[in-house]
Image (cartoon, rainbow, N blue to C red; front, side, top):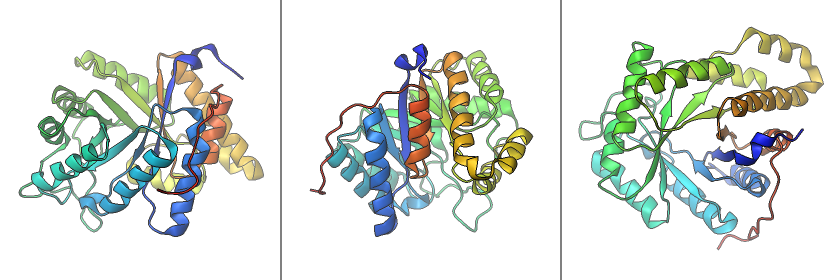
Length: 293
């Protein structure tokens, strides 16, 4: 099923840095599988307090060198001083990274609430402002169609997003969601608050329904009853169902003015690939080097 509106839609894919040789092979398989879809960029996540700093940098370099993709680096403020955080941004810049996903970040394991480092940035808006001093980055920030769990109200959440955009971010990527009406309501509320930067939907294809529900609970993302029923009855057809549900969600988003889709791959490329192909995205020839330089 090819759709006219897909031709103007761009894609991006999020990966996480590998923690061992097996995970490295999985990441690389993900990049090889998805690079031919011609993403506008791919991003690599960054653990709390820089816990994945070296692995994130290594993954970015490998993707740049072997797949020639535009790579965005994530950056959080958790557990680091301003200088330490901005040094990571400088390292990104030295490595040719021009796009940063700037996040406050979640509290480290064992801590219930986020607490700023005494010499660190207090929030993502401060981080975005700080990044302006370091280089000319294209900065994306996070947005929450169902409200960030730490926000007292949706209005407070929208106000916080506006502060991040006003500080210099050029776009926002949302937490994943399954009811597009939540996204449309949020987009309308952001526009009413004077936010003109694009709000990009974050899409999570359902690789494993039980795992996804646990993940969604941690992220405070709601899973509709109909999805519980559908996957409960799917049996061996779960992958086919997941592809159809995700493609339908993306199709509706495109029909309602969305021109960029950001996929959370969890380093599982096949479902993402199948969804993009179902939406009518063509593959392009991408030369990928076999050996790491």
